[in-house]
Length: 240
Image (cartoon, rainbow, N blue to C red; front, side, top):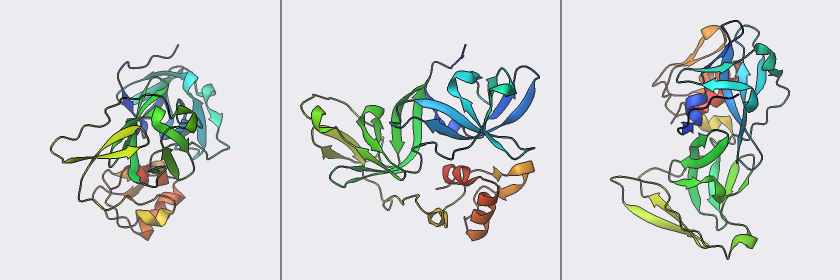
């Protein structure tokens, strides 16, 4: 039986958590990434990296025993499956557009409760999962399918204290967006777009080798090191 915290969990809080086996009280790795279904409706599993073997594994959501503040507990390391695919459909880093081409920001986090995705958070707005029309490799399309045009939705999206608010209208949807001096979000389709960002957290590689320190400015050397240690997702999470 899976023991989940009843409160919301942010995807960013899962990344880098230690994974502990209850059978032998040992660490089997740490969380590298989070896996979602094609529609980004459900959280389906985790990508786990073993520091010693430098291999990555898939942990199905059903095989998670509990999620704590610092660790994720599993019954046994036998639950880990060798990772043969790099596809996670993680929306973090993707840019959201509506069907009219309006940029709604780059996804910076996702709220989940149990297995269900509740909310998508961008650097410009927040909206419920049901407003995802399509999730692709680099982009998310916001809005309703044609068959849903006549449905009535009333949703208050986002809370931005101290910021002037404007409305972005998409068919019969209203999304609240803050006006900020930020430049438009960059698309994380090319890793080189990370160059110039500021690292917000120490990033460690295999055998705890330091890839980047907090407040470092990302350069090509840091990018190369992150690629070597398979830490590009962490570098994307912990940079701005």
